[in-house]
Length: 374
Image 1: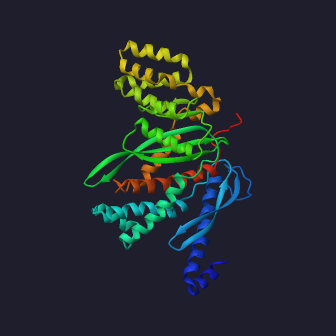
Image 2: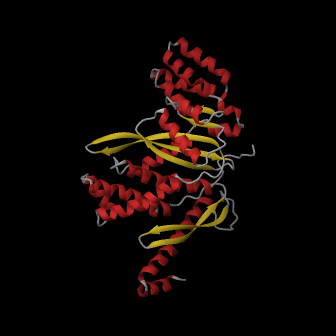
Image 3: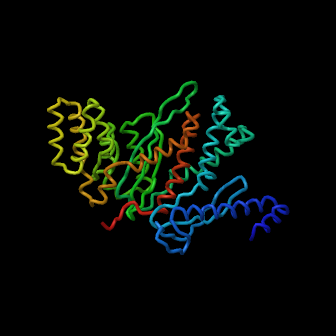
């Protein structure tokens, strides 16, 4: 169908033709994005090609003109990145819903009103919020309760913090995100949960829920070093190892020492993370400068600093930190910063899980995170 046919249909059957027109426009937009990312057109061979095209995958896109069926290009070496779904995704709906909830609860500041105007939100009513909330809650429940079908070899846990409005006050609560490297090498987001604190009982409940959904085969858990986690890991995953995230370890040590020593200490710890024999030299260096708190911090996490080295070298490089979840957390912060404080826990979970669904889809349809044949 060409543009003239589309325009003719538009005046005859507006609603259906608008959907066709948007589809006709968005597919070439993604094609252009794929061209930029691959360095060449489909089937074209030239020296500037960076990655190989890998066909298309059908992807549904929900808009106010109902659901569109689009053809999303696929790349072999890297995940295909597109602005199309970020703009029209369920995430936008969750974000708008959180803002509308804030508005209805009386947080009608100038900033909120401006955001509502910028997003083009009209008819802010309790019935509209309720309708969208019900739809989003169903998506959230489906995602965080879905069966874990594949075995998970490595489990990663990290938390980030958000302000949540509780009556007349604001509280800071942790959102835990759990991801796993599957037996086939793909990374998958397994769950998300909000907590007031980071006590061991909460983590045990989180792990128990994952196991009920089918989590099995875990050989190592990678996380930061908050108190209680080791006990939760020991209780929930007997026979598995715990790996202290190297980035979090360095941060924890540097907090205990004067700024003038931080750069050199950081370099020495990085060397020791590669070679366990170097750790005694780091302790000796810290002792000479009477940096006893730093020594205590290293000692507290010593048993979990090199466990990744029991696995293939290429695996160890990627499972010695929770950097991939740190990237996820930054994305959660970036895409929710316009809100400031969420009106309630449910609004935080709706938006966060909507974003996590998008990220997870890119992970499981993109490149393998690890080569499990190593």
